[in-house]
Picture (spheres, rainbow, N blue to C red):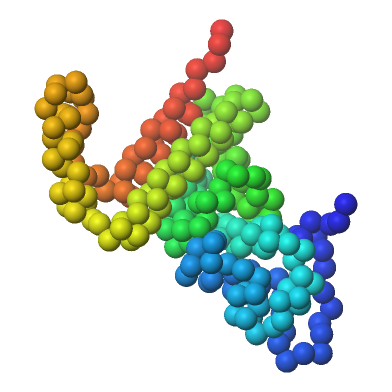
Length: 235
């Protein structure tokens, strides 16, 4: 089996006017994905951005999968800079806030979360920080508890980030903000709620406020961590 991209040495420099490294390739790919999403990223566009021929990139990455690995780890490098705290809860909160900030800066990033393990050095550093902090939670007694706690935290994180990014994308694609959406769908929804078959949904629609995304993320994350801290164990 070939060595992972993380362990392969950089190709020997060529006698060309354009120096190249995997870090430069990752940075350029991130810029392209930020501008046009993953669907707008191609080897040809990336090569043009770097000022090299497309085939030269294959000296550094074997395929698109390795390119995505490099991009993901470049984002994890931003998350790994989260402030260090002594308490387990504050540490996890810091990492999760940095992850959300990175996802808002790089909307393609949540698309790649949860799909497969991220094994780059910065991704592993974030995983170590998170796992080490959760291992100190009062409800985590052994490695099985730690796995469950990590699973719950990651499930919340992926779901919350994908939903928030999806809402942003939809608003941009349709040009419809909340008032416009309400104007378009309000009459139908009013007719359905007037049937009386959906009283709890009616309460949410009529009495519920449009919650702030950042505040909601923090409150729901706190709820997850409260559950981790108080995890019950069978007798």
